[in-house]
Image (cartoon, rainbow, N blue to C red; front, side, top):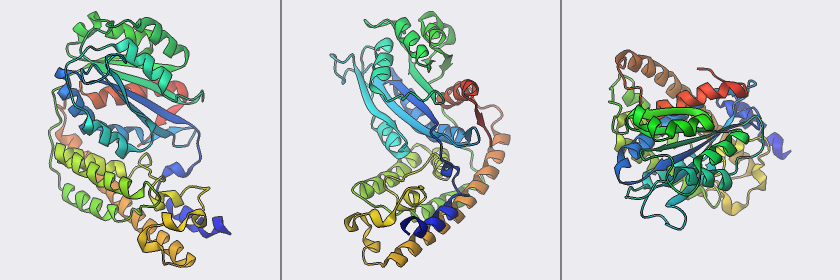
Length: 368
C-alpha cells in the first residue's frame, strides 16, 4: 500500500528525469586542482565552468540508461595545507550533491606551496571510493603549472597503478603546451592512459545576452519553490542551493544560466534532502519518514493531503523544467552562432572532450 500511494508520483517524474531508469553505472570524476599562488585563474574557471561540464555529461547514456555522475575534489600545492600530508587536502569525496561541490569550489583559497603531483594522485587512488564496477568510467583530472615530477612519490608508478585499476589519468597543464610536455605532464597522461592538455587559466567566456535569458532566470525562481526540504539535512541543503545560485550569479549571468540549465538535468538530483526527488526513487516510502523529518507545512496534513502536495509540486516542477529545457535549447543555438571564435583551451572543454573520447571504451554515448 505504501508504495502504491506514491506510484503516481513516479509516473509523473519518470518522463521528466531519465535517472529513473535503474543503473549501477557511474561516471566518476576526481578533480585535483593546484591552489598555489598563481592558480586563481584555474580556480575561477573551475567555479564558473562546473555547470557547463555537468550539462555536457548529463546527456550520457550507457546501454540506454543514464549513469550517475559523481565528482570528488582535491586541492594541492598550498602552504596553508599540512606539510606532513604533502600540502594535499581531500576537499570532498565522491558525491552526487553538485551544490556541495560548488560550495567547496567557492571556498578554495590560493597560497604559495609545493606541488607534488604524484603524491596527490596516489592519495586520490587510496582515499576515494572508486568501486570495482568494471562498467564505471573512472577518471582523474589533475591541473597545475609546476613540473609533474616534484616530490618523493614517483608519478610513473602511481599513474601505472591507476591504469591497472582502469582509472584514467588526464593531465592539464596551465601554460604553454611544450613547457608542460617538457616537465612530464604529457608523460603522466601517457602512462595513465589519458590525455595531456594545456589551458590558458586566465581566459574567460564572454557572456552573450540572448532574448531568452530573463525568462530562464524567472523560471529558476519558480523552480526553487518546488523544492521541499525534509530530514536533518534538509534546511541546510535548501539554503546551500540558494547560496550556489548566488555564487553563480557572482561570476556572471552566463554561469548563472548554465547552472539553471543543470538544475533541469538528470545529474542534478537531491533525494537526500528534497522530498520531490526522494519520492521519485523506486524504494522510497513516505510513511517511513518520522514526523519530525517532515517540513513544517506537511506536519498537520493527512496522508492523502501529503501525497497530493507532493503530486502538485512534482507536476509544477515538470512544467517548469520543460520550459527551461526548451528555452536553453533555443539559447544554445543563438549563442553558438555568436561564439564561432570561442577559445578552445579552457578547463571545461578539456574535461568534456576527454570524457567523451574515453567513454567509448565503456559503451557510453552522448546524445543531445
